[in-house]
Length: 218
Image 1 (cartoon, rainbow, N blue to C red):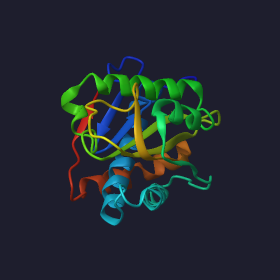
Image 2 (image 1 turned 90 degrees about the horizontal axis):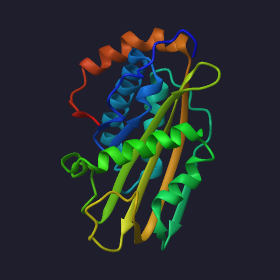
Image 3 (image 1 turned 60 degrees about the vertical axis):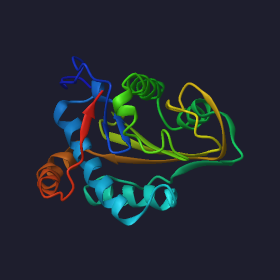
Image 4 (image 1 turned 90 degrees about the vertical axis):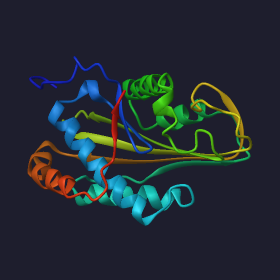
């Protein structure tokens, strides 16, 4: 976007908080990326209080989008989901097939770069719920500006139930046998005008947040 200061000098690919990987740092103004991060921190705390994404992934992602809506994001577009029982194969390919239909190529590449960076940091990797357990649960949220100058995010929830516990790595570059794979996605959009109007209330809500969620730039 012409005249817009972006984070092209950032040394980080993404931010990990909870079980969420927020990508898209290099393409956004610093204050807009912070706004997106703050909104996601608020949504994560509230959604996790109401629904367990392990057992109710569909309700969790819808409630997450509802919280974002309460902070000014438009969530009118319908969700997309891929649910496959007795899945065996590449989760990377399954995610890419879904993502390529709803994300531009540069955002898909940004997510993959963020996951590669994450997988190299074993201490952070172990913080993701389910890496060494039966149920793997990761949310991937690419954020970017669209052609209309709005900021948009696609909340992507990847959950799979493993048939074995032998993986110490992310799913990205390996094939695994599992009993079920779920991938769900919801797109939300917000205009620059609404960002500016909502910025003070979002930051005020974050200051009052009862649970402080650790954030890890990667």
